[in-house]
Length: 134
Image (cartoon, rainbow, N blue to C red; front, side, top):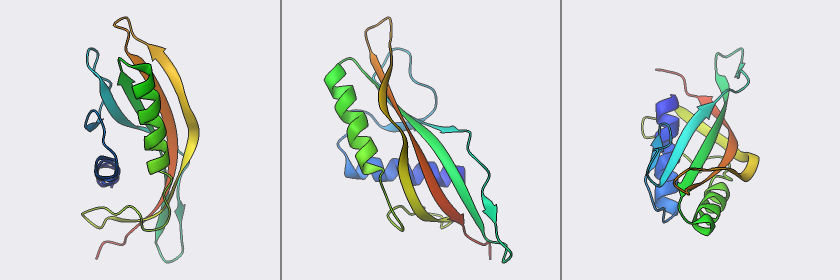
């Protein structure tokens, strides 16, 4: 389900925004400008009596670019694009139903690399309902 969630977020961002790089699920590339999605620890979900499950997913988006204004604008646009509500994000495999996504930590500068690439980060919290397997 996590891969499906990442793919849905990636598709949404790359469809809605004109990004300088594809969104990847990995570590930041050392030498290149990059946009990376990373899962971070989150609280457990809720299991209901009817066996449905609500999951909390916390994730981080890191953006790295040589131009400070580009990296700032990109992370801000990503943050705005991920303020989503019920049904605005859907996986291709139907493994979950999307409830909401909101910013968890506002965009901020994290580091400047030795190669003068600026790194900014923002964190998000999403709530999804795991769909029952038929």
